[in-house]
Amino acid sequence: MNFNFDVVFDRSVFSSTKWTYPQDPLYTDNKPTPLWVADMDFQCPPSVRKALLNIIDYGILGYTNCSLSTLNAITDWQKNRHDWTIESDWIVQSPGVVTAIDIIINALSEPDDSIIIMTPVYGAFSRSILVNQRSAITVPLHNITGRYLLDFDELEKSITAKTKILILCNPHNPIGKIWSIDELNIIGNICLKHKIIIISDDIHQDLIFNNRSQYTPLAALHPYFSEICITCTSPSKTFNLAGLQTSNIIIKNNKLRERVKKEFLRYDISRPNMIGLAACEAAYKTGQEWLEALLLYLKGNYNLLHTMLNGVEGIRVTESDALFLSWIDFRQTNINLDSLNNTLIQQGKVWLDNGEKFGAEGHGFARLNFACPRKILESSIKNMLHICHFQNDDCVN
Image (tube, rainbow, N blue to C red):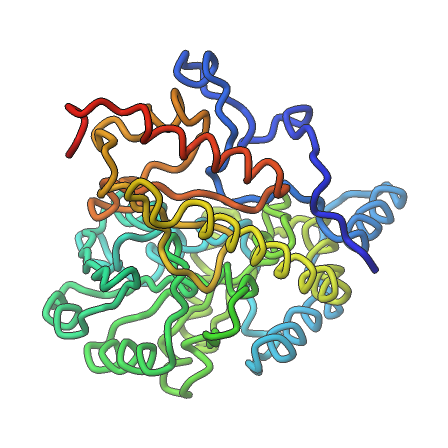
């Protein structure tokens, strides 16, 4: 089957978050192309849309449970796609990965405990830590010739008696890093040694467009690791289903799983989304051909971005193997970095994610979502290239 990712849809008609401008003249006057929040401007697979229509035609949208058929689709996907054997009773349903992280933090740590994150990283991690009255320990990833590495000695030295959780992101948002087996083994062993629970956000696990790197769930590497690791997955990024708020949290350890489930019940988060479950099952059962076509298209978009933008006027596009998000370094350009976001919107007519949303290490960076029709991406890149040509000399950093 052929899938056309070049079709442009008007997403504003359904109040898309991505395409709704803030009530701020910076946005409403300039109308920048939205290349920010992590959802795609593509339709989800036809087989998923058909499954949703069947549910709507049935017409009864009451409370529902996660069926054995859906659970089997989830376990089969992990086995067939990632060579990871899991049991259906390890799966806990959640409206979203961030919701699950909030719940897990409350279930498995106490106020004033500390939680490790490795920056730059998805900004919701630090928010979840702080709003739940925990302390964030930030261990920076080091940008070595365009690729990010973790200093494991620095990681271990950051641990205190109050450190209870480490949040891993694999693949790592926003830099597109796939953690190697060697790196995961070291992280897992450090956490075992210090009795630290690992929350592994693997929501982008299926979005590997470069075959030079192999994604592996940390929990799949060793039975000991699976006892301390909670893996957060979802079809939402892979199949563009984020609005259906359906995620699958995989917890092998019975005691940890029961504590987490109890915390979900405390907040009355116990009934999954009927439509979301139907989409999840259909995507995992029938969506592989569509996904392979998507990955080829995303690789083409990334290559276009890298070819047109990297090295031009000092801009650097971080080498990436995964995600539909690109981490772009503007530090060597002549753009005033303190007003980078405004410059991109006003002069480049593009709306990217400000790098500082991902930690202090993101100053001078921006995250660009390239999961859009290619002509929109190409037009946006050309607009970005115009920026540096029109900067005054007194804007040089």
